[in-house]
Amino acid sequence: MSSKHPLSIPKKPQGQVTRGKTARNRLRQVDNFLLLYEPGLISRRGEALFVDLGYGAEAVTTLESAQRFRRLNPELKVLGVEIESERVAAALPFADQRTFFRLGGFNLPLLPGETVRAIRAFNVLRQYDENEVLPAWEQLSRYVQPGGLLIEGTSNPSGAIWAANLLRRVDEGWRKEALVFFTNFHLGFDPLEFQTILPKNYIHRVILGEPIFDFFNAWKAAVAETSPLQTWGLRQWYIAAAEGLARRGYQINLRRKWLSKGWMIWEEPA
Image (tube, helix red, strand yellow):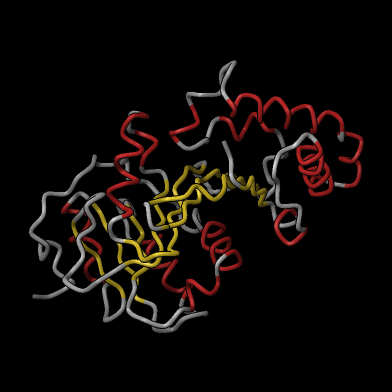
C-alpha cells in the first residue's frame, strides 16, 4: 500500500471542504512560532509526523512547512491532509519519501503504526459551528503523541495577523496551553483587528459576561494607557500594552523574544 496514494486510507473524511485559498508564506510566522516555542518537539527523533490539516487548493503551505522544519530536523516526515480528492491529486506530484498528501479530515488518514507529533489546522474551523469545535479537537487528539501539540486558529489573508489556540496532548486529551496572537506590525496595532480573526471557540463570545470580552476590554484599556509609547514605534507600544495586560492580572508571557517579534502569548486562557 503506497502512503502517497490519495485513496490509500479507506476512511470517509470527516469535515467540510474549505475555500482553499492560501497565499504563499501566509503561515510562515505560525511555523516560526513553533520552531521557537517547541524546537524539541520538531527536532525529536522518530517517525512521528507533522500534519498540515486542510492545506487548501495548492500544496504550498505543506511544502513550505516541510522546508522550514527540516532545517532543524532533516528527517521529519510531513503529511498534508485535504478533504477534497482533487486537491490531493494536484498535490501528489510534490510528494516524496518524507512528504505525503492524503485524502482525509479530522479522522486523520494515518497508516498502521503512524503517529503525530504536531498538527497545524489554520483557517479550517472558522467555517464550522461553534459546537463542532470540541468534537473536532477530540477526534484529532486520538492521533497525537503525549506532549504533542495542536495549533489551531485563523489568520487574515496575508498572514500579517493571526490568533490561535495552542493545545497540549496530555493523558486525558488536550490541555489548553495558550491563546497566541501575532502581528507583523504592517497593519498598525489595534486589538479590534484581532477580534475579527479569533478562533471559532472565541469569535462569537466577545460579549458582555464572557471572559474573552473582559480580556479585550482590558487590552484596549492597556493600549490606551500606553499610547504615548507609539512615538517610539509600534513594537514598543505592543510590548507596553502586553505588560499592561499582565498588570491587570492576565498571565501574559512577557519575554521580549516573543513580544518583540509580534507574538503575544496568553498562557492558560479562559
